[in-house]
Image (cartoon, rainbow, N blue to C red; front, side):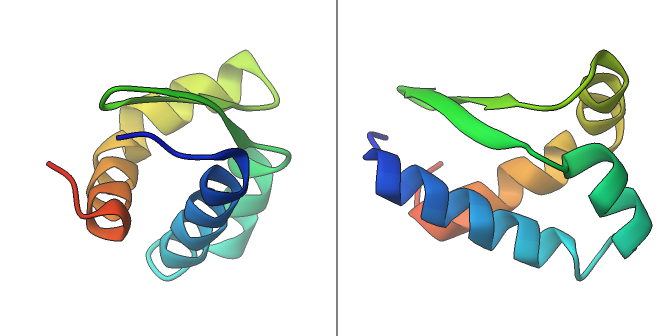
Length: 77
């Protein structure tokens, strides 16, 4: 998968919108505030978040959801 900067922004915005349908607004605002896609390399997407705590929580609780949403949005597996 190869995404331009504008495509990355669009995919991440859509991912956050879909996440907002399955997690509450407070959690989304707390752990995903100021997050963005930093890079895309093959099938690996690096997302920057605001803190180590946010990184830990996102990786442990939401990474599967994020992966599924991004695969759906980009039609990749």
